[in-house]
Image 1 (tube, rainbow, N blue to C red):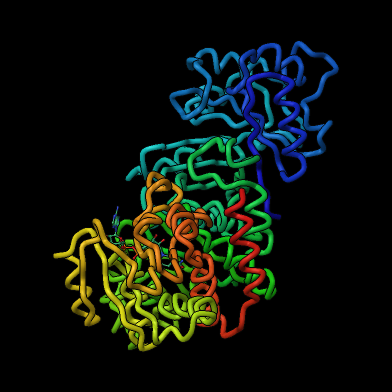
Image 2 (image 1 turned 60 degrees about the vertical axis):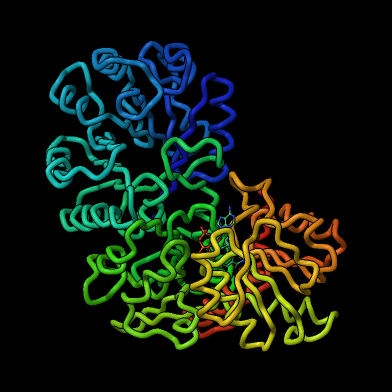
Amino acid sequence: MTRICVPVCARGIDEMRDAIARAAEVADTIELRLDCLDDLESASREFGISRTVPEGDVESRAIGRPLILTLRCAEQGGHASVDYDSRRRFWSSVKPPATDCFLDLEYDLVQGLSGTKSFDADWEQIICSHHDFNGVPPDLERIYEAMAATPAGIVKIAVQANDATDCLSVFELLERAQLEDRELIAIAMGPAGIMTRVLGPSRGSFLTYGSLDDESATAPGQVTARELRDVYRIERLDSETKVMGLVGNPVSQSLSPCMHNAAFANADLNSVYLPFQAKDVAQFIRRMVQPRTREVVWNLRGLSVTIPHKSTVMPLLDWIDPIAREIGAVNTIVVQDDRLLGYNTDALGFMTPLLKRFGRFGPVRNARCAVIGAGGAARAALWSLAKEGASAALFARNVEQATVTARDFGVPCYPLSQADFAGFDIVVNATPLGMADATQDITPATAGQLHGVRLAYDLVYNPIETVFLREARAAGCDTLNGIEMLLAQGAEQFKLWTGKEPDTEVMRAAALSRLAT
Ligand code: NAP
């Protein structure tokens, strides 16, 4: 059984009750984070946790879900300013839990309480936990062995993943616990650890944690319980599941997991798509991807590749499609037997919506196109414009650097500052300017620079309405946002991985729903 545990953290009793009721809609197990409460004593009486309540029972009866009680001190990542003695006193005052109630006690407490008469809980219901918010400790195996030697029925180890490859230690622990027939919850926290939260239960983890909503995560990298169920379809995952994912840094803002998982679900495929945040792509490919060298047993079938790895990944592959080689960037990897094959679907993704949208003005091959930016997306755009027979020019902030790209595609290169696009039919923004972050209010071109242009094409897709597109509309241009390219390149990736045609409307709806929230 896949257990999704939703931690609830609230300062007041009423808020806590409300959060429990909401959590019950999506959780298999609910964790009451007692450390969040302002008044622990009153709450303990109210929820029937305290021994002083003779007939009371913990909230679990009322909500019909197994419960975990946790009082995490600040030093171990929680909210409570309680010292060791206060924690010990608190747990000694707690009623022995019913069968559907677990107590999460940190390792130091488990050591202190085991064998004492004042603590008479059923040890099978005790979760002995250890958290490391800095990274993966070098002595992780030893920590696990020490915790496994306590009387606690369940061991929980949460470490911080600073890179996707840090998840390997968590997978190793889960494998070992299964061999030893021991209940283990093992998690890598942080955005780089998301794969352990999604794949953990299918690799033997006793449970996984999912937050109530985006705002109420109780640990870094926690995804919502609804996402675990609806996007990653966690209950369906098993050792046969085909794994695909996005490798880059960062990857947390990407719409690709939403889009590809929706397409997999719609096609009823036992496949999942995960974010892999990796700083060092060579290490990631060697240790987790290449079947000849990888250190994890999984059914990994393919990857999307994004910033900053599209070029650096190329020497690590066994074969590269000639188009990707000409562009100088790979955004898709297919794992075929023990070979890694590289493709570029950005070029096709760029041109497919452009051909549709520009059609009303005439053929793209007759158009004069300005491409702003000189990175991977600009290279894919320049390659496909050249293939289409259109003329192009490059505009960049750093002309000296961009000249290399311009020379590769035989196009002129101009400084972006004070550019006038009046003589162009199509202007493409292939920079990240306008993306939903610090540059959201910045445009690479103003309305004044865009007068006379027929179509402004922004490769940025989040937000859908960028300042660049607003400026373009003010100048009377038609506009095209980056969602269409995202869908077209994603559909091509889906075909390469599965050999099937995806339903692009399903992918579109999934991507847009993510943008709307
Ligand atoms: P990249 O390889 O990092 O290249 C980014 C380019 O933008 C570089 O030439 C960079 O110039 C330039 N740039 C960055 N900040 C700038 C600024 N403040 N002013 C002027 N130029 C600036 O990235 P990429 O892969 O080409 O991606 C570019 C954009 O396209 C991203 O927003 C990405 O999300 C989007 N994209 C969308 C899709 C899609 O499916 N819709 C697909 C691929 C990419 P320097 O070299 O001087 O830093």
